[in-house]
Amino acid sequence: MQAERNSNDVADLNAQAHALLKANDRGGYTVPNHSVYPFQWNWDSAFVAIGFATFDCGRAWQELTTLFKGQWSDGMVPSIVFHSNADHYYPGPAAWGTHHEPPTTGITQPPVAATAARKIYRADPDRTRADAELRALFPALYAWHHWWHVTRDPDGTGLATVVHPWETGRDNSPDWDGPLSAIVPTVDVSMLRKDNKVVDPSERPTDLFYNRVMTLVEEAKALRWDGVAVAKSLSMRVCDLGIQSILLRADHDLLALAETLDFTREAEQLRHWIETATKGFEWLRAPDGSFRSLDLRSGHLSPCVTSASFLPLYARVASADDAKFMATLLHEWEKTTPYLVASSDPYHESYDARRYWRGPLWIVVNYMIAEGFAHYGYHDLAERIRASSAACVQRHGFREAFDSHTGQGVGGRDFSWTAAMWLEWLNPQKLG
Ligand code: GLC
Image (cartoon, rainbow, N blue to C red; front, side, top):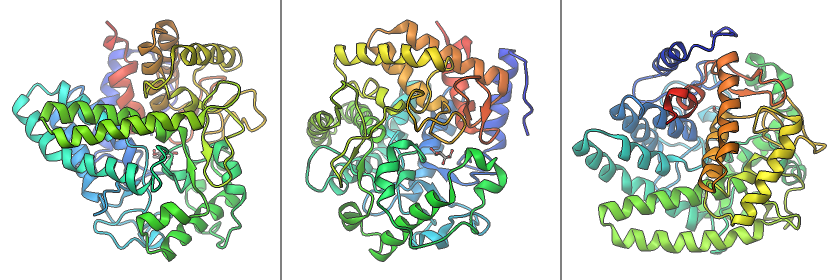
């Protein structure tokens, strides 16, 4: 276990980040953290691959390739691949009932993989390997994007449907309070939970939340996990602004890769998806000018702004005025939460400084937001996000998340994606 520290020795942290990725390596894939999350998680692995690409591109490709071993025949890439025995984990393969080999969950997570693949492709000094790996991986990446744009957008609206809060990666965000409140739990899983035994329960979701989200799993099981039926009829159907933005960004990256490989048919299709998804963002604009997630069942936009509201910058879908609006908004947040970027509006009643996705900052989300602000010319703001993120890690280690008021660590310790982001982005030696 990593102790809280005051050390800000960069070389030391580089070595520790390498050591942590090695310690969390299970042979071809990396666990997010050895105690709370002991399997392969989808978007964690994509960020981890980006971290590996700073020193071992072969291992970076392998991280993605291993993730896609869990891909379903319809293109879906699951949120968790249980490569090893998972009897001790809840909810494990039995609870999901997907009957897949290797065992997986039945839901997905944010599609960062194509963006990671493009990064690794650019970074790999071994060009023969890079071409071979990309050619081998491309069809799987394309099939996943096809699944998002077709199976998860059955009416062709340009809005990707998400059916479970865990698909968003922002599991307990206030964005899901409204959609979840309509769900009457049919199961009580409070005795089965393990997460709140290893992490302070005040930082974890409530039992009612768990009962509701496991009710969604029961609904999908009753539909035998049929992709279209799940997308059309689960009790939660939302367009998550985070996924919508990450997907559009990844579409752009996948298009660039398709062009590199001269895959003209796929490139054409990707251009079409990009056009429709771009138009879809118009549905996500609130009257105050912010972007928000949309409840596709009720038609209501989320009542609060979250860290995802800055991700249209990363998707390159924001206008110059939108970017200005977002920069002004973040300045306001900074006055009360100096460690950027709180996961949820610090002035909103749903804000909770230490609870999962309702206040604390996540370094991977910051990485995407800062990249977006830098692209739109807000270099000072991007640097403030980087510097305050780096300060959190230097003072408190590779924690899962951090308190936006104090910078203190929240949730689990020894997190792979935090170490990966140290290597890729926070490490001051990366500057210039
Ligand atoms: C939590 C996070 C999710 C992440 C997982 C593993 O469930 O909410 O985004 O993928 O932990 O780190």
